[in-house]
Image 1 (cartoon, rainbow, N blue to C red):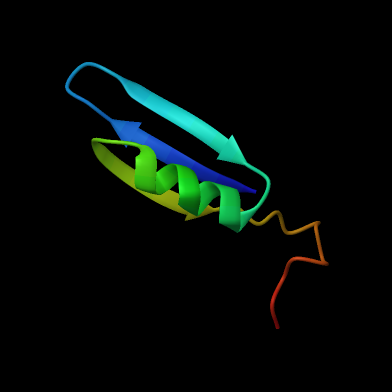
Image 2: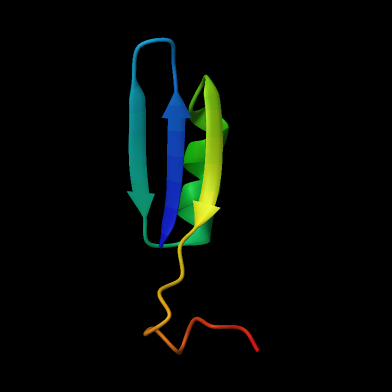
Length: 50
């Protein structure tokens, strides 16, 4: 899962995405102070890179 967190003076908004591609496309369009994060759950072994 990919998450974009957007900070503004009075708000914090969080957007969730299933794929890196759609998250990066949205990241380009979103304005403001933003952070792109990949969330990996430890019980989701298919996503863990060894």
